Amino acid sequence: MTDANPQELPPLVVNGQYIKDLSFEVPGAPAIFGELERSPDIPVSVDITVNPLREKTYEVILHLKIDAHVENKPVFIVEVDYGGVFTLNVPQEHVQPMLLVECPRLLFPFVRNIVADLTRDGGFPPLMMQPIDFVQLYRARMAQAAETGQVGHA
Image (cartoon, rainbow, N blue to C red; front, side, top):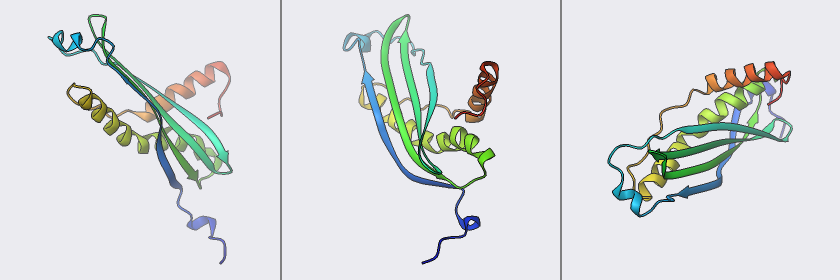
């Protein structure tokens, strides 16, 4: 068997996906269910971590924290770290955008489904998160890195 021509390799290979860490809490249960006269505020915090595994292969972890509350009372808290292992066959200048934009974009629908199931199974309407603009997150991350002099690190 001969090695495949690098030109023929797909630019992005998803080797696997998994829940790395998961937490769902309803700290005020059962009383909070009787206190939900209005929809809770549901801010979503997003972060991405990249860990090199071997040449051209990386672990990308999409971190979400959702802290729903009504009038400073916690309704539910979701923390999920959803990971994927990706092999990239792209020029070096495309590696960082692929890791911080395309890989999380591929992971997001699965995380969204997990969050919807968790909130539904926790006694609330399923939380259907809006799509995340990973390009904007990438740009903000690069701007912050430029300010601190760390451009070029994933």
